[in-house]
Image 1 (cartoon, rainbow, N blue to C red):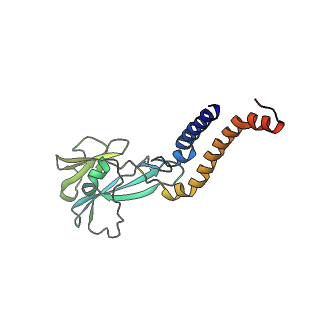
Image 2 (image 1 turned 90 degrees about the vertical axis):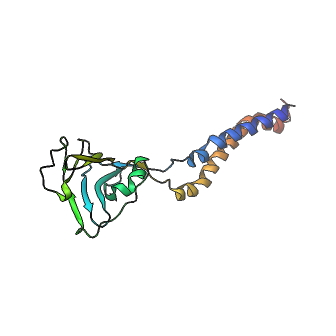
Image 3 (image 1 turned 120 degrees about the horizontal axis):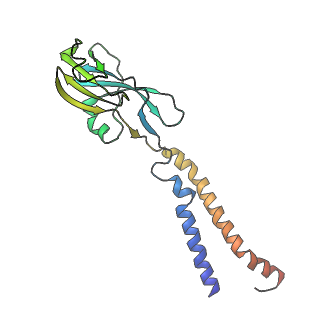
Length: 195
């Protein structure tokens, strides 16, 4: 009876460690994932594209950790749903700037930039932190946008590479716990005495 209870206890302990140990933590959803957000300052620039008939948003992006700031570009309307759902927008590289018209941005109230001549009387306002903007045509509000904040993809390769080591650590912990528990019985058996 004692032996059966011991086996069940060890099974329970080993299952708990393996399900909550290193291997389990390694495969959690956000392990090795990074958070991306607008840099401070975001250096926001807006352009209207004749070809895409959309606003090209250019800004500086920062990643958690020590990564350098990256300059990013994406089209506002084509990516609005993705950005609003905190997903990575489809970034683009702009090689031909001939069909782009710069849109003036002001930090002041709406209408402050309307006096500045611009393509189709477009202008934008952006708050002091620079992680959103509102687009206007003359005095008419067109739409408000936020800059992307999203979690990066987890790096599956690192997880696969580290899994054998995590399982080995978990098994070592289970083995050590078993050795500590069974050591008195093993030592008593070697000396010929029973507990």
